[in-house]
Length: 302
Image (tube, rainbow, N blue to C red; front, side, top):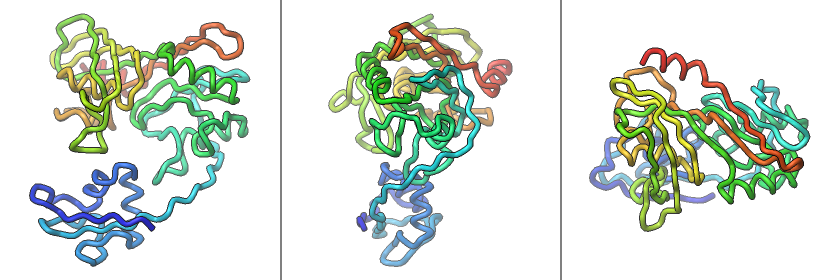
């Protein structure tokens, strides 16, 4: 067991125990923390507490983190929208709400569970048993194209392109506010938010180089429809960069401070185009994921 202990200070009270713990321990998902609380692993002032307990100043919170056990990942017959496939690679259109690979709180229903079934286990093993075939990720509530490698040779070739920033990756997004310039570039290093470790942020001191190019596709009264092209691939890059530019992505509950008048499940961000040099033929392959129905409907409303 790993024990986490902390005393609640001024300004940290009145928050739910599960929400506070998920922010304090960003390596664990909130659903996993809630499960641990239900199993009696969370204590306030030495007494087991429920997830909805409201913290008070000077409360002593302790949380037992069970020893990590490497789980087996099972193949699951989950329908996939296949955009491209051959003996080396598979490009899928990931739906909103699907986690890419297993993690605490998400050991089933992930994209990895689905591709294990689809590819009959024929996937690269470079990233270990929890991430077979996975070279890059997109967020749970981001939709669109994602490449999966079926063997180690293909994995190494695609990973090299990712490292060299030669993969062509463009996204479609709807952001708050009207962007005046037709195109622009956000060049700002990204690292962990020093105040909220679960978030990423523009971090001049400890961040890594990050470059996002954007182009206006359509302007509305209060929003702008844009295309973003990644030059680098940092965690939450587009979400962080567009927020830093004063135009957070519509529906982004983590980085967008502005409320959405629409009933959305997370950010309106779609991995539209993925282009790469094929690991075997050496030819350029470009795949486009159709704009999802909820996104098109929102555009029509705007």
